[in-house]
Image 1 (cartoon, rainbow, N blue to C red):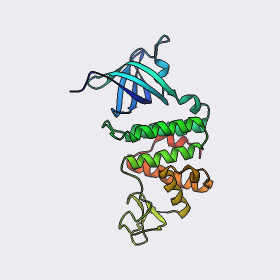
Image 2: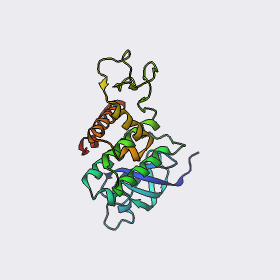
Image 3: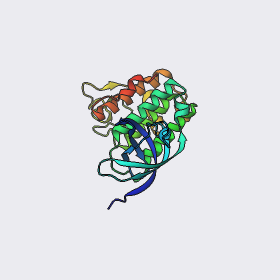
Image 4: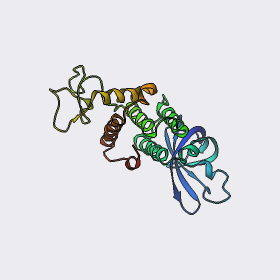
Length: 244
């Protein structure tokens, strides 16, 4: 039986109004997966915790279990990534794409490894600090999120027959790189430097990621975006605003 009152760390993914004074808050929690909860009275001027329940905020939240929607009873801000993210348009659009993608890919099942939550916190912190170009932070987060979801593109061997690389065509439908024999219409020609860059992004190898050529960065970003779109079966709206 699920406990009525519980507490967890969470990232605010999105909010939308409910009635005249309330909001529905979508949270990615550390131990309970994705949760939708009502925050009562947060749109009133005198709300105790309205400002703490904004996107890009890491919070310690207490929730009361409900049938379809939970209820926020207490919230303490741990880290407000929005301060650094909102100061720059490119950071804001890239971070928004991260939240939207997380919301789309994350179901309500609990992730015992907590990898998705920890990756999002790390990516938002890096985005807020502004030391790494926003598209690079975004692309690394997206391809690693695909890996956590079981959809990481195969970048070492042929995704169809397993033949060892190097290969120079990527077929999103097949699941990654394909050899000449397995290549079908629709596969995209890709340079070896782009493949290597995607491998570095997946590994979080920032020493090699940050020195990438701009053309390679853009090509990899487009391939990663197309892969996300393919698996979601519709585009992530925020990605269209990202400045690359």
